[in-house]
Length: 114
Length: 110
Image (cartoon, rainbow over all chains, first blue to last red; front, side, top):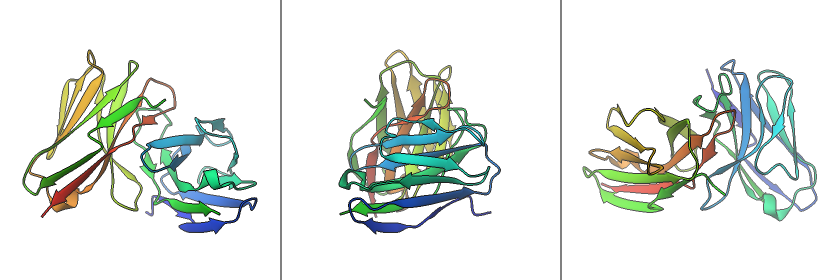
């Protein structure tokens, strides 16, 4: 039981390049989330998916798109990377998507945009 | 603006001492959770306290909630070097969204 996995672990992009961050969970959870974490700040929600087939914007969605491919997988795409998107990205999942549910986090992807 | 704000931002103590960190929030909440993050890792859930609870224990952790002051505290007793991590409070006002604070970095010296 791997929990939440993310790929890649590290990535360096040039401004304007695109990439997709992958996330998968094997806990049969309904809800999945993408956060970014910047120094001195808490996690900020980018997008979330309350259930398979639905996605909603979080606090900082600009410059990102998401796809809930199936119940297990939730990807985050940067269409045209900018230096302001340099951050550590975490994917998380929870059983039912209620805010009181425990969220289970992946190990993170450290992204640098030059 | 962030809902939860931890205090202090950083804390350094000796092994065996107790560590106390605080979280203040701005609007009424349904629940408050504490998470731990070891360096280079994702967050791990520690404990949840509901708005109608005042205190909760889990092992060496004690969490209190004062809804009149809109604040919570996390106490780690008899700290160990392995407790070195960042600790985040997370609040929810219902619905699907949880809001995380900026965290307290705890360093426990052996």
